[in-house]
Image (cartoon, rainbow, N blue to C red):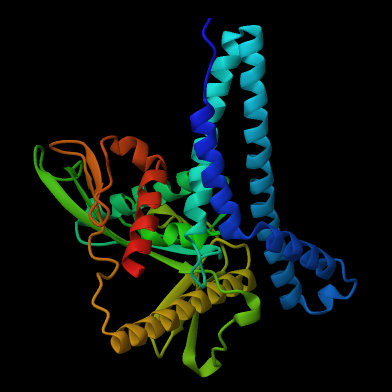
Length: 368
């Protein structure tokens, strides 16, 4: 049996991984983790809950990155040992295992490489995603629900914790809108490239037979605001309404007026939350989302001022960024990056890695 030679592939991975460690600045990261551990061990830490939450959140995120770096480093070493043993013993099973591990390492190092491009001010944050149905009637509300499932499946694949805060069901099929948090390191930087208008083309299951229908849905992604930087919102700038939570078709899922809707009067921003057990919990969750959206509005205003001053005429985000075509052919295509996939079912089942990686690289080129 011929020896397995993956020398060039491993050399290339080690080179890429070395660049990643340099960009991440691993020695600095180790020092930051030690400092945060010391801060987290302070017996008086929780005297200031806001600061304590910030410290523990940063520690968790930085430890996760450090763990990934150490894990990949160890796996590269183990792979070389595995190949050497497989060749020495003529073990075809071990050779197959080594090939599979190489593919896994290539995928994980590619993810780390993409993450090094996420160096924006809020990229390391958790994300708040809102999906709204657009033009297209029942097809649009059904499409909005398909997109929601797609992102929930993506989060599940990547072990990203998700909390659904609010779902507004349509009278027919699907949903009018939904809001959920993805609480994982770099969730905002990763998923922010999904923001924009999504288009679905298919044979409508709701209309006349044999007729294609085009429908739209909008995806909004904002960074989750940290407690320590929460925007102060005067009471006279908001209106709070309470109502009874409901499920599909208006079926009552709560016998008290526990759902909360908050309207920010100056901007017209409306946030609702009905998935928590009490009115107090729903109000707190809704305020957190409102602050996150206002923070994003402020960030966009600042970016717009900078672009105006600099005369920046680069393409902006939004306006039909991706098409999902189910008829007369099968294809999902991102109109910004030209990345496409011919298996829409896999995409709707959460296979978004290729689109997200291409989007992050595209955004980096546009910004540079």
